[in-house]
Image (cartoon, rainbow, N blue to C red; front, side, top):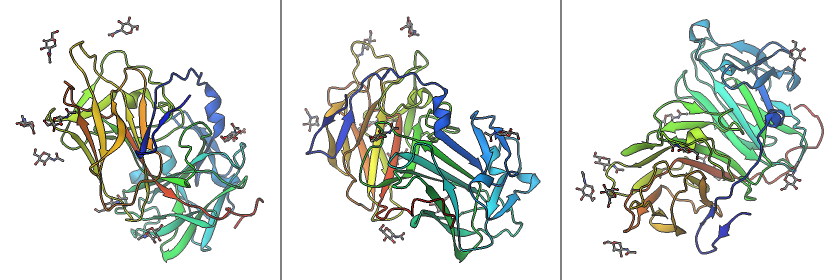
Length: 373
Ligand SMILES: *[C@@H]1O[C@H](CO)[C@@H](O)[C@H](O)[C@H]1NC(C)=O
Ligand SMILES: *[C@@H]1O[C@H](CO)[C@@H](O)[C@H](O)[C@H]1NC(C)=O
Ligand SMILES: *[C@@H]1O[C@H](CO)[C@@H](O)[C@H](O)[C@H]1NC(C)=O
Ligand SMILES: *[C@@H]1O[C@H](CO)[C@@H](O)[C@H](O)[C@H]1NC(C)=O
Ligand SMILES: *[C@@H]1O[C@H](CO)[C@@H](O)[C@H](O)[C@H]1NC(C)=O
Ligand SMILES: *[C@@H]1O[C@H](CO)[C@@H](O)[C@H](O)[C@H]1NC(C)=O
Ligand SMILES: *[C@@H]1O[C@H](CO)[C@@H](O)[C@H](O)[C@H]1NC(C)=O
Ligand SMILES: *[C@@H]1O[C@H](CO)[C@@H](O)[C@H](O)[C@H]1NC(C)=O
Ligand SMILES: *[C@@H]1O[C@H](CO)[C@@H](O)[C@H](O)[C@H]1NC(C)=O
């Protein structure tokens, strides 16, 4: 069913195929939603997502429950960020998750951190986040209002997944919420290691975000009306965009194009660590109703080299995803250029982008037992 693979070029495309899968409520049972710091054994249904959040009391037995100051609890604040669990004791404190699907499956794990001066010390902490015994990331905040979200796609070798907060002497670790989603479909199937989210962007909207239920996997899509680009959207029939990655219609129905339509569309970024190896996912779908004398065709370049060897023509109702076949060579700067062909009458567009970096977890996480650390 999948794909065209070309060994010369570093990308491949998921040719459109219509996946007629009925998406029912089953997905919620593939989710673990933990609101850290709410009263033990309590639970609630989140009003924005409709997801059922439970207390973290069943997943950890250390730490202290805390709440951000009342002045900052606005009604628009995501409910999971109001309370948190902080860990003044011990250098390493772990949550133990046991997804019913068990080891060897692909999961998407997301941790949320919102400091907001909960401890009234006005001192931004820095600490490490671990997945089992291996470091996942360092958590730090630029401002008290910074909300940090870390995501990783991971295939555990054990039935238990330990998400650990490690005190590195720079402040008390804490966590606001923890999400796990079962992801065992033909998506993000690389065997290069775990995929750490670098960014996930919905082009063409300048604010807001989408997650569940717009995204059946609860991926978080942040908005970006990228630099020097014009917004395109389809006010017509854009309800269904099928594709391997099951992208939300609300994400795919907006796109950007270069402001000057004779110019290429450029997307640039710099890695946080120059040895990072990126996996790039570009998602395309047509958002205009083309006249018979109009065409949209473009080529994709990465740092000056042709990245995919076929000319791209986005489809109407089907998402086309072009992705790295292997981790990209580390560079200090990346530039993707979408360049229209000479015969194309319309400029290039892009609807959505995901960038991940490869994180190798060499050792098995921990012994396969319900050990608290
Ligand atoms: C939610 O809480 C209610 C009562 O507080 C309890 O009966 C129910 O089992 C809980 N549900 C879950 C999924 O934890
Ligand atoms: C913190 O600030 C730096 C420099 O201003 C910026 O590059 C970075 O993205 C910010 N980090 C967060 C988590 O907001
Ligand atoms: C998950 O994916 C693996 C590898 O593709 C497969 O062997 C396994 O059967 C899948 N598990 C489920 C529950 O679908
Ligand atoms: C954006 O537009 C400004 C002028 O409007 C121009 O100077 C700049 O080079 C453009 N940047 C890109 C990345 O196209
Ligand atoms: C929407 O789609 C339906 C069925 O394909 C079609 O009959 C209708 O004309 C379309 N509407 C617009 C505005 O394109
Ligand atoms: C658009 O770009 C082309 C080629 O770079 C240039 O010749 C033209 O003057 C530009 N148009 C505007 C309105 O800036
Ligand atoms: C960058 O990544 C390399 C390899 O993963 C690691 O050894 C190094 O410590 C990282 N550097 C920083 C500043 O995080
Ligand atoms: C395409 O056809 C329309 C009329 O159907 C016309 O107005 C327009 O100028 C044509 N565009 C091009 C690029 O030929
Ligand atoms: C497209 O136009 C450019 C500049 O005019 C030219 O260099 C290039 O060879 C053309 N490409 C094709 C495929 O005709």
